[in-house]
Amino acid sequence: MSLGRLFAKRIALGFVAAWTVLTIVFAAFNLSEDWVLAGIEGQMRWGGASEAEVEARTREYMASRGLDEPLLERYVDWMGRMLTFDWGQSITSGEPVIGLVREGLVRTAAYVVPGITLAIVLGIGFGLYAALRPESRLAGLGIGTAYLAFAVPNFWVGGMLYSLDGTAFDAPPVLFDSILPIVLTATTLLGGYVSYARAHSREYASTQFVKLVKTKGAGPITVARHIVRNAAIPFVSMVFVEALALLVLSVFVIETLFGIDGFGMQLFTAIETRDLPIVLGSTLAIVAVGITGNILQDIAYTALDPRVDTGAR
Image (cartoon, rainbow, N blue to C red; front, side, top):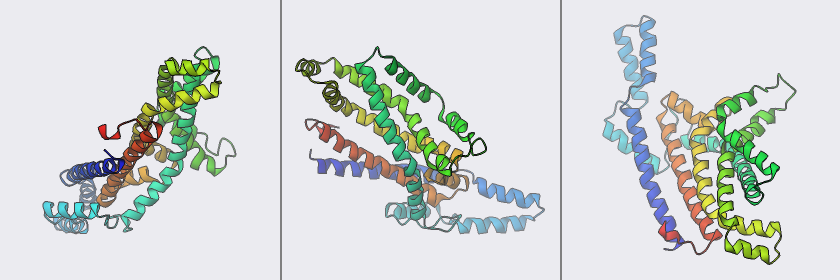
């Protein structure tokens, strides 16, 4: 199977996944209790409003969010607009949803991408060194530190870092806006990356072709390059899976701790206020990231080893 056909297959499967996930999210919002409406009604009754006033406010609320239309009609309308990128406006702010989601992704990527890059570089470096120098104290220290960072919950690490606020020392704002979120992102991933890099590097370090390279007088850098090239193939899959899990889960913690108005904070606020356009738009963005990651993974497989049959996966 050619790469072009493979990409088309990935995109087609992505559309099916997007439709399924969006349907689940839509159903969860429309078939569950509306806590925002319940709060409004409770406040009105607590304030002494009559039942007629409460019912009038309820009808106004339902109409403003399009909830007074038949469920099937709403579903077809929402799904059609989501998949054609006509995401409409946010219910709470009135701003275009596609612009809000794009801005949130940019703010989140500003610390996630450098954090993932740092974790990959350190993970491969520590893992490879530990595989080639298993008796080294430096390797043991690096592995132990990485595993400790992986074992400690990131919300606890983030809380400790946040406690170093400017009251403790004269810290520049960039420390809490960029540097610490990048460090927390990297430490969240580092333990897993080190573990995989070390395991796969040790697997290839004892193979015949590496022994042959060593007998030819190759230096440590040349040997390491041969090992990394082969170990990188299974490592690529793990990098993508871990990074996507970070996007879906850890960004909520990081952005809440450091007050970053990024993708995670935006989605959390939208769920809290039942802003369905932003929730569906954000969900579609996550699916799009997954599709893009799968395509980049296929490209990386082919670049690392042209013998890999991408059509078989």
